[in-house]
Image (cartoon, rainbow, N blue to C red):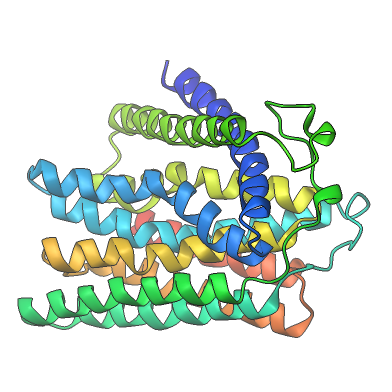
Length: 334
């Protein structure tokens, strides 16, 4: 039964991702936003909602061990984005190299991605340091507020420097309105918003079903709670970002694909961390520390790969896979 639930929830997430990515492109076009801003803000924040809700629900619940679950969910999501999601982009680019006009090269807005990755590495590093050393509560709260304000600044900078907006004739028709090409100004706003909300609802609902299935499966095999909070829950809730980016890379829309991932990394390294620093004891155990260190290493690999050739080749993919497998091995052996 658990396996069937996992399969059904995964299918729901994929269907939601198709609706969402298609609608978010049109929303960005109508708002005259660049592809970098669409991917890094609209798509990233929308698909980051499932994993952001987990620590909030855990904190509100107040059950024994809820703080550990919250911390695991907060630091586990960026780790998966900086390793598994990045590797998936590289694999998709190689798998669809003949279909993509730019081949294996990533056609991206470099300035936006550079800012995303640097922003992520700086603030995730600060969160790591504060979580390792003993700091007074007032310092944690103050740092959390700074993280929150930093994300507001990031949103402003990304909108101002988000690259050129997508051309109307290059965009696929709205899925819920196949007559899009007949409309001079694109699809009606009402239908576009309905599709956007349906896609987001499907991704959120599918992700929660996936988590529920994983919890039942883990309970039946006796998996520890730390594995659920650091690996299984983020793996499920990050599926929207991975699915969205996969479809965008397949279609050659690399700025949207990578902006979706790096934008989510920025969001996850600030807003959920703000929640953790302000509302719980921000103290990291060895599993959380290792996941954050490896996540930062994944960000460095992405920055290096984009700067070197603007593509995610076999070396980059192998490094991201090695980082993720290293954490799994450490958890299993521990």
